[in-house]
Amino acid sequence: RRATLKQLLTRPSTSRDGVPVVLLANLELPEDSAAAQQNGASGVGLYRTEFLYLNHTRAPSEEEHLADYLGILKTLNGLPLTIRTLDLGLDKNIQYLSDRLPPLTNPALGLRAIRLCLKEPDLFLPQLRAILRASAVGPVRLMIPMISTLNEIDTLLRLIQTTKRLLRTQGLKFDPLMPIGGMIEVPAAALMAESLARRLDFLSIGTNDLIQYTLAIDRLDDSVSYLYEPLHPAVLRLIRHIIEAAAKTRTRVSMCGEMAGDARYTRLLLGLGLRELSMQPGSLLEVKAIVRDSDIGALARTMDELMQGIDERSPQSLLERLAEAA
Ligand code: PEP
Ligand code: MG
Image 1 (cartoon, rainbow, N blue to C red):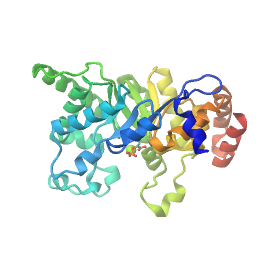
Image 2: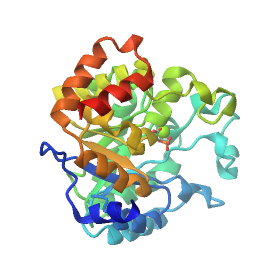
Image 3: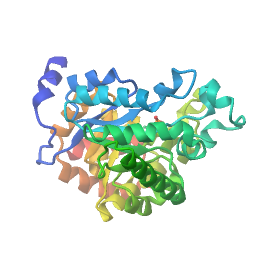
Image 4: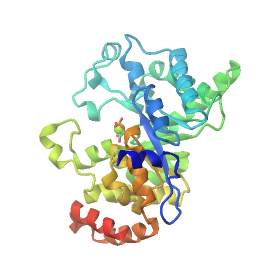
């Protein structure tokens, strides 16, 4: 079986009925970009940059960020790199953060990710400047995590404009058209997806957090993990809603949570309308095998029908119907 998966490496990621599906890699560490390459990723859909902040006794400098991004761009050889801006909160026990911020009662709902970046610009601006500067060297996309209000996006977009002006006066290069996207990980953002899409170049569905916040299940708490269900009808309705908002506004949409790399869900996600999935490099070939074996037209028709009575269906029956369909 491994040999057959290996053979898929150079084959296109296209369904049986000829629909191309973009398969991208998630990176936790810069070293992971080698695995992305070896498994035939078409680029990086999520680079989690937190480790840069975790392994320091102070916030990383602009030059440290930049060196890291340029190293990855080099291994990617012209393929796109989606850099997610800092997604940290106080739960990570970083001394230089806890020195300056009050303790949180609930880290998952507190000052984290974009909220922290907007509140503490001196943590964030070196990263923002480095992402922009990296965009002069290769195809970089900037992605913002944990959006929950339109105001956050508007503030961040203004900050990016100001930063670009400053870089220009300093004679530092960047791509003025670098795409800016947002992660949809909070139910409020999912419900507001159309307005977000009008402000952004792309959306990416972060199911790890979207499931956590929709179902009120702490994703790190084993005692409630039996309730963590990606196929919960409420989750599927939100995903559907995001995909429809993206289609309506002609905005690119992808998925980068663990669900995107779980081959059990590939048919369902294709049937819902996703054409771009980002996952751990080790899952790429397995998902590609299913894409190549799927009739996306048939999956879309079946999924339309299944969404009708979605509240009454068990996750297992959904998967069985989709397996029969294509
Ligand atoms: C997600 O929430 O789905 C996601 C991809 O982000 P992280 O797992 O880093 O929170
Ligand atoms: Mg997340």
